[in-house]
Length: 157
Image 1 (cartoon, helix red, strand yellow):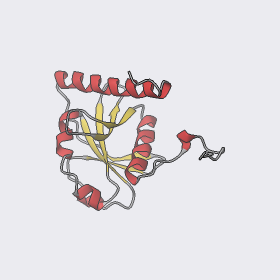
Image 2: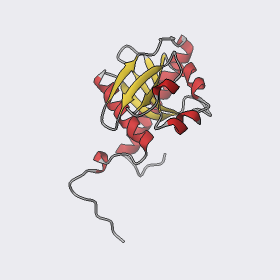
Image 3: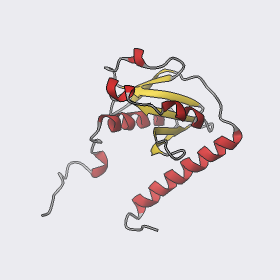
Image 4: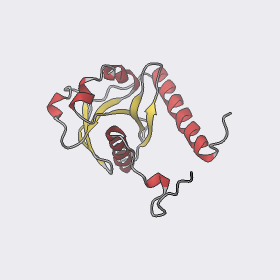
């Protein structure tokens, strides 16, 4: 059975299906406006997967955890492990999220599927040089690998 896509939308214009993925898209758009580049669903080490890792124009590294609601936030037990992999840590939530639940000493980004705004800057805790090197290498390899898969999706290496 053949499936014909609506010709008015390209596959890249379709919105992600899950609320957290919609927030990721808005966060990446908002951070791009601040001259950051982003990789979604990045694994900095075994057992951790950050929603968005962003690399700034001066080499700063931000991690953003997207939370679609109270239950999503309350079930997250790994977020403190992300602090060792970034210079600043942020939560990204929509306008209806009860922000009083979010821990003090973390950043806040208000987002939707189309844009985002930093509402509270996270404190800066600079990575060590050795850790920064590992993070940058992981970021670069993930970004390059994904670009290569888009360019040549049939090649498995």
